[in-house]
Image (tube, rainbow, N blue to C red; front, side):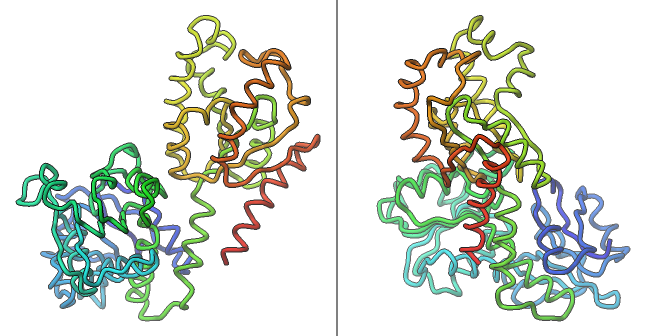
Length: 414
């Protein structure tokens, strides 16, 4: 391939989709071990590549020239081959600067923490210096400023930028620091873009802190790289349009609601209409256990089932672009809601409880039991969902209502 991104593990990468949206269909993933880097650059059988972790500094030794800005930063993430001459650039600084502006954060005169000390950390320091941050402290595992003394030495941090891979797919439960431990914190940036909202971003938002993940940075740096590859200028709105397209394509559609509300039927229809994969949490659990949900309840009890459900939801929520039907009780556990919120749009299917089926439902075998469950669950459904859709007797109509609700948001964001 003529263009691509080089890295050690790239299954999580959105770069090919981004560059295709920019008009480059010859861009792909190039996974290389470190001992293969030298041979790759010696052959020079490419027109342009991006470089991701862990090679942003290593790659510099193989280049003929390095852009002064990239040289000053100390790492390269874009290489252009011009008639056999390899030139390295750092477009991450353009991407991070754009992300900070997009998040609405004011860095000038602020105390800023940069989490991590790798190549992206160096870029962050350069960007923050350019934006005139008052103080910049780089937090590493073993340096003078580290995770052992971060709260005692830097509790007055006003901005935090995470450049570590903590929270990245598939290890989505991890996070570098607890945002609530900083009493002056007003903004946080996490350069991780998969999942859409990392655990760190979610915790920041829960603390009322303005926060954003790394997708806007990824697309912004890719725009600059594309312009270097082809010596061109993309339209001003190229980044915003591409980010919105990726958000729509990569986030899951998760259906919640009472048992018997039609989540599985409607979910399959939506997945078919959108050419997406479909998953049903109850069906996944039954496949894993080899018995029905009713049998699981009878043999092992509700607690055992809920633990299986949580494990299943966490794994399914790591997917991108899937349609997922959740069990009626799934949203009742906070950890399930958190897992879903990382990379999903959630739709509450509303159906009158008099129309819900009770046959084969372990916890809602009668109308009285159903009413009691509904009273407890409905406030959680409403708080969790991005959209609430009334269920029709015709599942196709309900599926169209769900997609219309999502499309209305898409159009309003354009």
